[in-house]
Image (cartoon, rainbow, N blue to C red):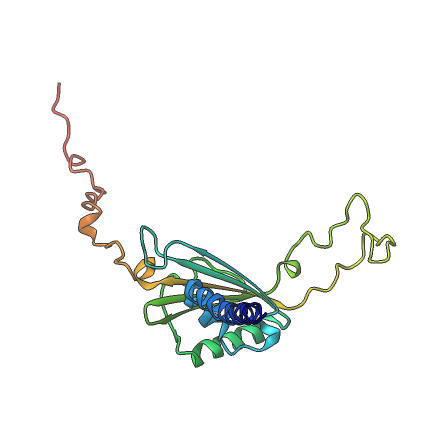
Length: 214
């Protein structure tokens, strides 16, 4: 009986140690494998309304093996683009990021607020814009079959599209050594584009000569 009791106690102690050790091990492995850049973005002091839905994508190697890592985060905000951009820009500034005046930033003109930032060995592009549903020119176009509302009643083709507020935030983070904007740009030295063409003659040098009599 005593031997069985000892075995039960030992089994209970072992199970307790396994349970208590599994959780720290799980969180330790997750912290070691999670990209620290996303962890830093999670720590930005933005209001709760400015990060209602978060989606992360990552490509490449963290150690720049063959291809450096590219991180992209898309966030939805409940407030407009102006207020959301101000919140994120202030949060980046408080976190040590510095505004980066570089061309192209962006590569082409876009709607909303587009700014570039640098911190240590990273570069960051921040784009805050209205949601697509507020700028879609086909959002209020009538359809062949009139859509129905939540209760199943048909909606008039001429009805206004549903309200679409808020903003969309895109954050792109690169390693500085892999950012094309920090690499040497092609030279525009005229000597590399060939010689200038000869000037066009405006006066005919033979205009004053007359043909000899035959």
